[in-house]
Image 1 (cartoon, one colour):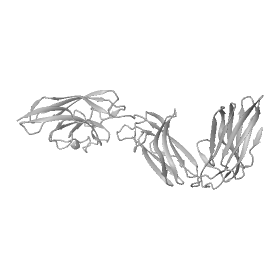
Image 2: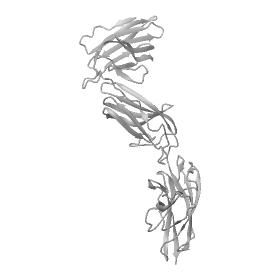
Image 3: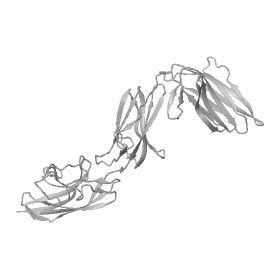
Image 4: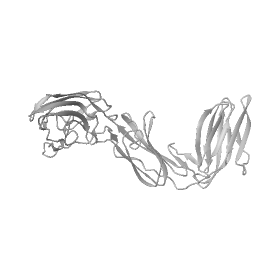
Amino acid sequence: MRVRALSWGAAARAVLLLLVTVGCGVAPIEIALDGTTVRPGAPGVAIPARLSYRVDRTARVAVDVVGPLGAWVLREPTMRHPGEMYEIRFDGTVPSHDGRDRVVIPDGDYTLRLTIAPEGGSPIEWTAPIAVVAGDPVPLVLGEPRLSHARITPDGDGVDDETMIDYSLSKEAIVQIWAENDRGNRATIQGPTRLPEGSHRLPWDGSAGGRVFGGKRLADGTYRVSVRAEDQAGNVRTRAAPIEIANGGIERLEVASVRFTPARVRRGETVRVEASIVNTGETALGTAGPPPSHRYSTTDSFSGVLGPDGAPLAVRAGTWRLGVGWQGAPQELPLRWGLAEAAATELAPGTSIALTAEFTVDLPSSTVQRFWVGMVREGVGMVTGRVGDHLIAIDP
C-alpha cells in the first residue's frame, strides 16, 4: 500500500494518522514530519527536518530520500516495536556508498520515503516532499593520513617513540583523530578541533589523548589511526592508516638494594658498589655504556668517557644507567654505568640484574663522605631519587 502525504503548503509541521489493515486487524501508524525545507550549513537556520513515527505492530522500517539521481538510504530496514516513538533527522546530507562519509546532496526537490513492513502484513509506503536549498556546492577533501612511522615503540628510549600524523584539508573543518583496535575499542588522539584549510601535522606517542593530553599508553597491538573532518555544510570525510604499537607501557626501574664497601679507605683506594636493579614497569628497557667493568675516579665524569673510536661515548636519550653521587660532587651522579657489559642489553619487565662497579676515591682525606646511587634516564634525569646513603671514612 502506498500513502502520500497531503500537500504541506507553508506548514512547518504535519502529522498524518493512518489506519491500515494488517492481516485481519487494524494497525494505527502515527507519522509526523517537522520541517519540509533544509539548508545544509546555513548559519542560524541549518535546522534539520525531523521525521518521527510510531507503529502499533512490530515491523521493519526503512527510510530513504529519492531524487532525480536516485535514492539514498537514510536508515536501513530496522525492526521497530509498538509503543515507542522513533525519530530520524535529515539535514541535507546522505551517507556515501561505502558508509564512511557523508555528502551534501545538490539543491532541489526530493521525496522523503518511509517504508513499513509489518509482521504478517503487506508493506506500507509513506512519502512527503522535501526541499534542499542553499547547500554548499564546494566538496570537502580530506587527504589520506600519512604516518612517519607505521610501527612505534613508545618506551621512552628516544627511538621510534612516536609517529607524526600528516593530513590535509581542502577547506575549514572540525577535525577529530582517534586510534581503534580490531575489537572496536577507541582511544581519542585529538578531540574535535576547528582547523583551517591546508596541511596539518600532529605527533602521537601511542597514548590516549596524545602528547598534549596524554593518558595511559595503549596496549601493544595493531590499530587504525582515523582522521574525521566535518565542514560547516555537513560534509563528513573519514580516512585511516594502520599502525602497530610494540613495547609500549609504563617505564620504571627501581633499585632494590645497595651496598658500598669498604666503610673506610685511604685516598687513592677503591670503593665497590653493588646494586640490585628491578624492572617494575611494563616494557623492556635499554641501557648504554660504559659497562660496569669501567673504572672511574671521583675526579672523573661520565661525560669524559671515550668510545672505542676515541670520540666521546655516545649515549642515546631514553636509555637507563646507574649513577653514583656524593656530597660536594661537581654534578648530579657524575659516575654512571650501563646495566650490563653489553650496551645492547635490555631488561625485560619483572626481571632483575645485579650490578657491581668500582671507583677510586680521590677526595680530601680525614673526612667522612656520604655516597648514594640513583637510576638515571638519559635526557630526563635522575628518576629514583637518592638510594642507599652510605658513609665512608677517608683516611690520610
